[in-house]
Length: 366
Image (cartoon, rainbow, N blue to C red):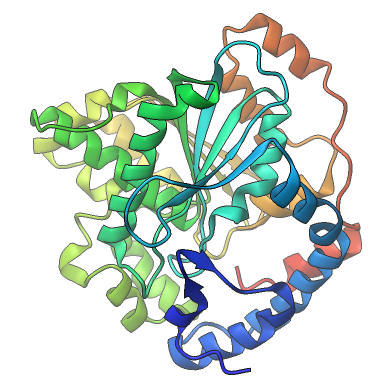
């Protein structure tokens, strides 16, 4: 099998990489883009994940469930698509979460948010998983533009799918947290300057950032030491000259953006203290910066949790999930009926054996 260049893996706006061929993709990526070789072992775990969960549950729900509306077009660029996860209950307009997946700005894909989408839909919450151009198909400005356009689509048209345009929440994980934070702050800056926009920050009731990095100046050397080499990172971020523009922590401190800070919704960041991909200081530091300019922000730290525990391993483990419960409680705040249903919801079932989750955590390059 000849994989060609990374751009050849993307056809017609869709990513064609199966778990079965993931080891070949990771090997090729490591050779041509300098990504850590531990991806090869992680590919094995992806295959086990496929056998234990994807084939039996994920694939059926994602491709055949009437609750999932796949690949809705929101723009005219490659990968300008989003997936909608809809609750079974259609009574009344639903709150909406716009979710931006991670993937080191290189391997993100909207389907990575399927587990979150399906689980939030069980709590009467619509989820829109927004896809965007990855590197090398696009660079950071393309990613920010794509996600902003996806948010605009949701803000303006989600009522057609049963969503409440006045109860929209923005959420991102890892690289997706960085991109979505850039989108939110850029939108606030534009509004503070009186520029014409297609959606309003006021429509976003809260921002949830999961395991994100918000200061590129602090990340470039760290990522280089972990295998995402400086040359690649600089290409993704359009050179060091663009670091300030795409570093929300730095940008929010600029006195010229003080009015923009006042427009931001409540910001809630979640981070594991054992996250070695993006250390938890990334969330701590931006929360301090946000509070310093009067924005409402908090960081919740999870002791001993890794970069992927909060988003992947814990939801697959089943049972009680503190982060999930926290997000739902914020979305349902003030809705006594919804909160009562949440309180009586049965524990979620385990999806993957514990031994596989622990092994995946041990060998994951993230």
